Image (tube, rainbow, N blue to C red):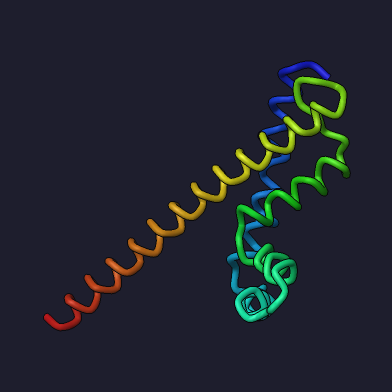
Length: 128
């Protein structure tokens, strides 16, 4: 695979990784399992058990495992065709997926702020 195709694949593969990691660790649809994992990550007496449950509460941590799945599933490697290419691809995908998630978080925060400002303006205009 040539370098341009690898780079394009890198940017495309990071999208579903970010989407899955964000959805499971942040969105309302997985709130109950996430709250269970948060509780278990704080109260478990076993360090390994605490770390295992913490994995499902942190989008950065979880993105590593989703990336591992996608590398195995797609056989994606970057720059080198041997095992070093898989390692490079893994860290590059995690890095890019987390940039996507950070941008998404900033976008959601800006939208939420805008909605709040609109509600304040509407309530002020209703008072007048």
